[in-house]
Image 1 (tube, rainbow, N blue to C red):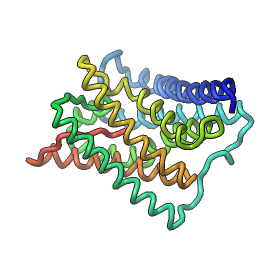
Image 2 (cartoon, rainbow, N blue to C red; image 1 turned 180 degrees about the vertical axis):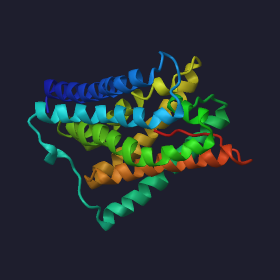
Image 3 (cartoon, rainbow, N blue to C red; image 1 turned 180 degrees about the horizontal axis):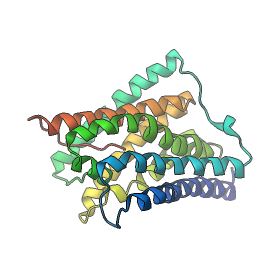
Image 4 (cartoon, helix red, strand yellow; image 1 turned 120 degrees about the vertical axis):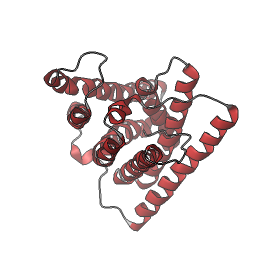
Length: 250
């Protein structure tokens, strides 16, 4: 594809990602107003579920808008029952994701680099460790499916024709990592950079299994398990004497 075609594909893909992030905020506004949450105030744990679902519903609306605008229907979505081959990629992707996280974590520790927690988990901490268990079904059935819908089935797939699958995986992963900047922001920008790099690495795994299987269910399950297992490990850490050095749920 020529230069203008590549630029258009990149602009559309980036536009969808930005629209999804904007709609994520907009869709949560009614709930924020209803709960009387002030700017800068952390939501009460009991309100988190509603805010969580509402914000991700906004992202789905952004995808719906893109499909209508582009003349594509819901058939554009690569959703089908996983085959045995797909299930092998689920296992391989999940193991590969944790292998990458462990390896990068070792490098971060060796270099003495700082890390920073996910700000989105703050309400969970205020609700006590047990509230982390509430997040597990949310990341499995809301967070992972919606983020994979946006960043794999729309952003990454839109880039295939212009850049090829390999480059599309990298570019979509870069966009995915960058949009996580707000929840990992830290005055020490090294900490933010470390976490964004970890998110990018995880996203490469999700993008790779999607490119290989062309089935959205596969990266969704990998992503969901990747996050859910980390949250469960965090719960174990907070309720026992075990030490956990690095967590990067995405």
